[in-house]
Length: 409
Ligand SMILES: Cc1ncc(COP(=O)(O)O)c(C=O)c1O
Image (tube, rainbow, N blue to C red; front, side):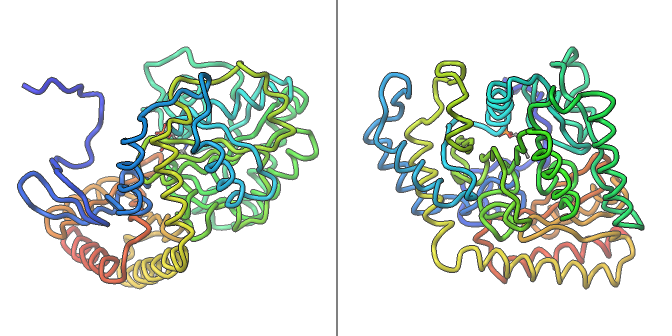
């Protein structure tokens, strides 16, 4: 009998012993191509030598140097690096250990800085599994059910339907819905923040339409509401730019970073501007492990890899190869309803959760390819390989997918 909790859902039954680049090796010595990448986490691949060496070296110095007790010597260098790679509006950083902690922190900061109580989220959102995270998560009831009561003060505005026949009408309808929320549920001067994933992650790999994101930011500016970009999944190079907001030319007031920023070492960062941080009372937030030196070492090494020459070019090129390949398959298989998403954050909408599960199973058993689904209805197959993926590995994945489509037709 296993002594492990059953609360974790399982994507596969694999038992793994090690990983290298885009591949994992099971305890039986079988190799699998890992296009789940720790749920869009292993940005630099498994066991990247620079990241592993930085963690090993840091482990010889100290594992933990608590931020409130003293400041260790990696905090400022990491903040300086983040200042260089985040949007211009962002210059001040707070650290934690997970995405949920950092979205919570973002809302705590927004409430303190604006002295307003409410937050607006968008349909399909995923912001974490803490109680506030669940309250702000609308991608599936399964994440919330059985946990009531959830914190109050979270209001849900619509997100444009990616499958709508009339794209412009979908955007206009969603923005009208947001205006309605501001008129009927939470007045602008009660609303501290709007938190949005520039590309919906768990909600189905749906990029926000340009006009929609601009409309959200415009309303934030008009009403003095903070615009919080949750880049936990879409950030750290995943979309071919360092941050997905760069595709849109918008400046967030707060940016949430985790997952790929430290290659899988539990680490998260909130970025904001000094003027807002100055309104966050000292001592009103914190945490034992936030800014942990092991995490800082992993993040510094990861950022070094992400900024290395040609790294993001590879994300763009491999993303194009993947998307072109999927579109080619779409032309032959009408089961593929839509191929969407920038860089290596690509979703294929199959419109049928059973088919998605069958394709996933076939890819795993016959193609040695690990894939995950996404979306409220589980009808989207998502492609989120390590960002170091090469041309042959993308070709292998497309071949496995094509075989699965034929076998499950
Ligand atoms: C956009 C987004 N925000 C927040 C989270 C929560 O991150 P974590 O699982 O590290 O708490 C996730 C996790 O999938 C996410 O995709």
